[in-house]
Image (cartoon, rainbow, N blue to C red; front, side, top):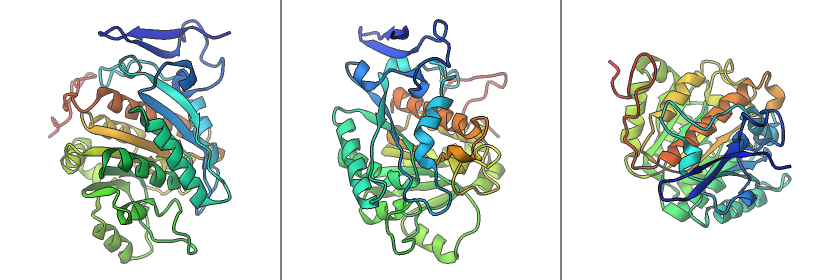
Length: 345
């Protein structure tokens, strides 16, 4: 029996089918779609598709991110339809649905990348925006290729403990540590509008930073976030991106292992989940065209700590897309402080 869902009607009379009504059906009942949203085959159209990409053949250390999409879906059961931090109900304004998973060949990375790109282009075919749940960071390349096909050169905000602009591992050019170097080489990204956020930890040598800079990347390290604060970081990101079409790629290891233990390449000294969510909220009004959240490896998680963090990140990204590029950039005042972005000291 199909449970009752929250259904909203927009000002122009369009129906939006939302999550299962938690007041009538307990949250732990039924299959786990993201935020208990309908599947794409249960709605007439989809404005935002949440799609899993359970692929992790590109990892260089711990495996297991292939199980990330379903773990994040399970961890999203408690999400609610109204986002008070943005004063917005994303599922009421646009039709958001779970598109299931895109399948990639686990034994052939190039073939998997091709299949993911094809699947993403098909999903985007009717102006649908994609929020992907990985999977390892290899999947960012085919998703960026698809976004580039639709929007031309894209701005990129890359939240990660690592640069992921290395050249090869064991001679392999397509891994979770190389997608953004390949994106630069393929002319996908706008080199005046690319930035890493939350980067930290040891490198192989100074050449890593020299190469990264030559590709156009600027870096906001996790230490920068701690010293400068969220508002200053948000301002820097907004100035870097401008009004360009924006791809957001977030590796869950951007969070400190205390906030995201369930990942393949953890690094100490990372950002808190609160800092990451607040920075994402500060991107309000930017033209987000596609995004991914990757590297959730549930075998190393406990009490859904990592899955819950990832689910909230996905929720904030959906909210940004739903708000659209016409949203007022300062956002609502929320909480006892009444603070708005840009009003810090």
